[in-house]
Image (tube, rainbow, N blue to C red; front, side, top):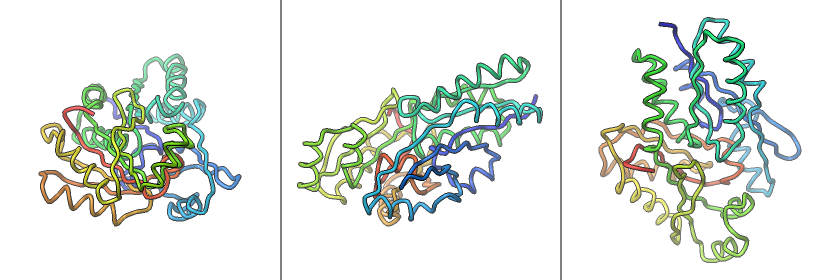
Length: 290
């Protein structure tokens, strides 16, 4: 049985330490801010996330770019030549062209290297939702599961991966076409915090709204209490748009009532943060359904 390497992308928002610990290959998406393009590395060598969010708070409007097929080919060829099989887990195909780039690359690689195993998963997930699926795969690999077993398990549980999040500045959703301009004006005037999730199709969907930040955090917790399924996994991840205090408050709410492990709290990286904005709080856990 050949060893295999897990390949993912920076939209997973994992910590650099976790990626190194589990020998992950992480391809950076790109973000553009103030006219300059930066690779989105997990170690934030291009730009500190606090600096990124400070710039956005000052009115700079970032954009993003996907991983291209050639970048996947270059990374995977290096692994194939090192006698490794490859499991690729990508950012949701409904939110980025990155998955399609990986699909094109895999088709070409299978033709060039027919004896190599190259398996591809569309996580239909984002930020630490994608990251939690990658982490689950990495832990299974460490426990000795085969590439086929890991692939099958991730495909089986990916629609149990719940994403619930709230944004502080609704204008970023307006700019991305998620809500209308009129709704954004009303929401800002009334201090409305939308509660959103990622659907089974991997799309961002607005589900409800509450007035005030504190109620928004409690709403995320309430969603977890409704659907949390610890028989799949007790691991919980939280990501934030430069608001560690709110992230820690949500963690404390969860741990006060539920039998789970908040294993990672990390920044929402610039690629996801370009669309969600500062002070976003996102909660990820395994549930009965998304």
